[in-house]
Amino acid sequence: MSNNNQQQAIGFLGGTFDPIHFGHLRPALEISDALSLKQLFLIPNHIAPHKSASHCSAKQRSEMVKLAIANQPGIAIDTRELNRHKASYTIDTLKELKALYPTTPICFIMGMDSLVSFNSWHKWQEILNYCHLIISQRPQWHPHFNSTVQELVDRCKTTDKQDLHNLQCGKIYFQDTSQLDISSTEIRRLLRNSISIDYLVPEAVSNYIKEHQLYLAVKNSK
Image (cartoon, rainbow, N blue to C red):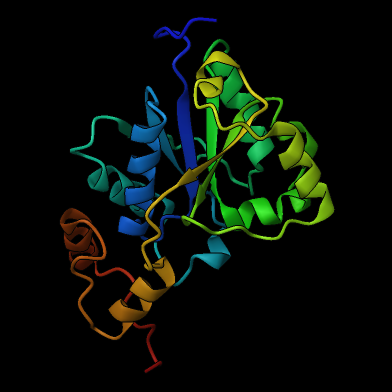
């Protein structure tokens, strides 16, 4: 099947983005470029209100993502999971996306740690019926998979990126990416301790965090 605009794959990368940082953004951009994705969407995950009490709201996480990608036309935001009032499973999101993009191959991006535990995901056996899996990996890293995941990789792995555009779903593709040693947890720790987060997050995100006084120390704690 020839590759045309209708068939050019689109990508989706989920995360809590609490807050979004360059460790999310750089691999996303590298994958989008390397695989010639038509568009890459960042999907902020739903977080139960009781879990995010000391962090920030869904709207604020969404606003920070929008600020982070404002000057990157190939990357957009998809807020469907934030609009749900309960935990959302990947399979539910993929079913919605396939209904929205019935003739477009969908590439769902995840880290190697997620693939290692993939057979613990809700309805994991169905996921590849709706998408390709793109595994963002550290160069030269060869993890140990359990036998169930190894069998899935052996059956579905491809090294031909054109498969991601020519086939609707069903392939697993490994893409080397820059693995920046940045975490949202560490950024929140720095902010609680009044330490600069410059060069860890886009400047617009840093300014938003300061303006809204996010991630500050909880009262009555150090």
